[in-house]
Amino acid sequence: MQLIRTIAAIVFLSLPGLAFGQDFRLRKQIDSSVLAINKESKHILSFSKTEKDAQRGLYDVKYQLKREGGNIQKIVRQYRNSDSSVAQVFYTVNDSLIFATESIVYYYGKDSIEWSATYYFSDGKLEDFETLGHGKSEISTWNPEDEVFRNYQCAKSAVRGYLRTQRADNHIDR
Image (cartoon, rainbow, N blue to C red; front, side, top):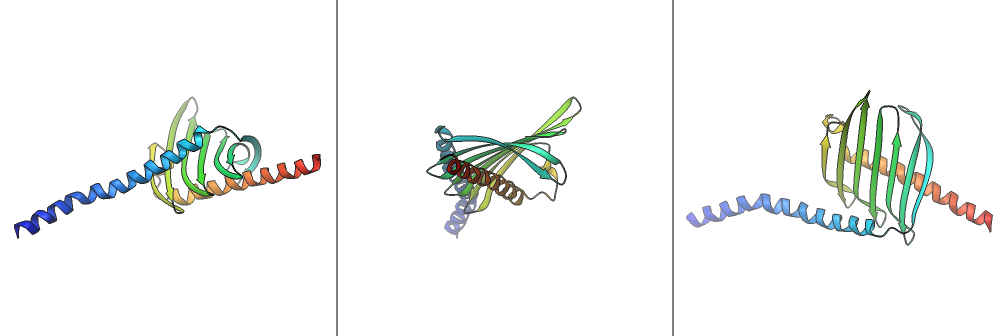
């Protein structure tokens, strides 16, 4: 009976370490992929696009993208309006989102408040995230997975539209 209690205690105390160990391994694997993408600075394209939003109206968005072998590996999306400045970065492997960051600075007259988040994805699902500061993560209805995927799809659509335009322009120039 004492042996069973000892084994049960060991298993019970080991479970949190095993669970956190899996998250740590996933994060480490994704972090190394992100470092590899950032290490190579070739094939970076930049463009701006005017977008429309029901809340903000028209606003200019700046994009940067990194491609390797025809695949988009990184998209940076930045925009600003009178009350905030937003920067979103999306990292992909084989057209699948693996990591994203988001930073928002909210302006209140001469004061500002910063909020930021990092998101880890695997197999099309949000596996882990961290936020820092005061912002949308304090709202009970906030769904980070849906929001990040929606923002990523918007950025990916803008980038693909830009690339189609570039290919069409290149064919006209020939």
